Image (cartoon, rainbow, N blue to C red; front, side):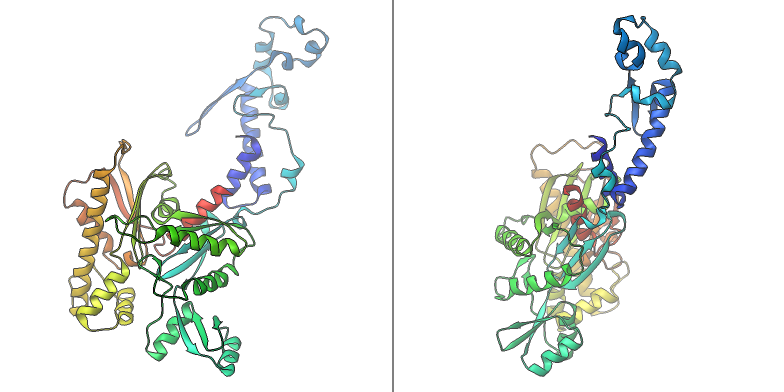
Length: 442
């Protein structure tokens, strides 16, 4: 890595522009240079040892220029012992080149690294956009749904006045999408239509890609004008079932690229690892429990070892509870998101049903993880205990992590687990992980 690359990496990690990062790197290198000039070897705890490599021909320019052979044996070492930081230009450091070197392009580069990448979580329930610095990402989300209303010029005029996001479907429909779709659905007591189902494109909804494109455009209109975008995709189903993942990923990429972006897919579980496990060198298990799927990734130093998904997720909970209680899925979803506490004993028929189906979901998820670990050939020999991070809207009810921990502890687990914790923001972890992936690829 040269100095320019070091500055870019520092800027990316800190979420600052190149010039600001350059000042910090320059200041750090000057301190190291001064210390090396005094003792030729510096040990920095947590980094390692930096040694000075002395070039005799460069150490004493006047002598070497007139008669390089006249430098007495040992003279270089003697001079080095008395050299000050100001004479650092005459030394070479083993880890890099000339630290005084400045490139005009570096000095004039004011690009803010926080505006060079975009993360997009394309979930069954919501689409979440993440921009800005990795340490303090800005996120905004929209419901991944729409409703179709009869077209009239008056209605369209009111929608424009009230900034209701919509698109025309021929001359007969106004398709209201995103968060506003839920509001209109509640008013008219109807179910929203979903572009995605079970984690991938909804094969029964002919408007899927048109609506998704509209939601993407609505969200990306608030994003910086960068072309580097990473979007989430689920893993293969653990039971070997077909979920058309190849088609799903290809259509999302085609749609996003057609909008002028350079996009790549990121596994959803792996994105959680990127968002939450930097302190652990991106080693651990990331789990995203969404509406259509639960996604799991085991990573070792950012490299995916195991990735898979299960079909029992938020929609499974909502539909199952709706079936046994007689309430609509919308009402069930509202209860789940507003007041459900899985850490206490059930208080009514709704909570009894929620506990039953959440237990079933979590046990199935943990069993799939055990089986995947047992079936994986050449599993890395991870000697240290690793964390598990839980995220996604389905994991948000209080007490979810407690139930998950009990399922893990039910019998001996194939890996040592250091902790089981919720993501810092479960609803945005996948989008933030996609943002970090885009930053590293910038």
